[in-house]
Length: 102
Image 1 (spheres, rainbow, N blue to C red):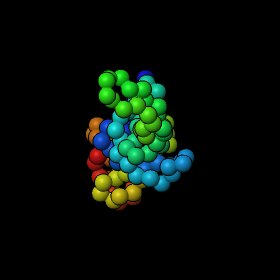
Image 2: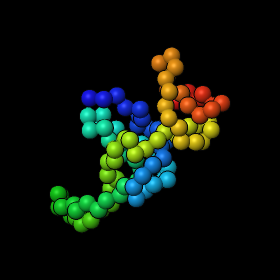
Image 3: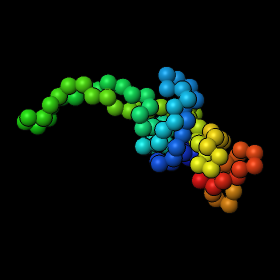
């Protein structure tokens, strides 16, 4: 199991794929698979079977997981996509002149 550089609730930008350039909030993180789920990114159609009486079935759109290497953290201070550095046990922005803690 590897340590992740993003956490649930972080804002990230997608670097590649059909949702390239889209910013979104991380909903869930899976360190075992090294994947993240980002709100309104990588949408797929899922077939749902009705489980209870009167519950509708059909097709719904849900977010699918994507590899963590395809996203980059967005600094809340400078607003740019940035690599993550570590200082005194905290995550910091690596942009020149920023150094903001996450």
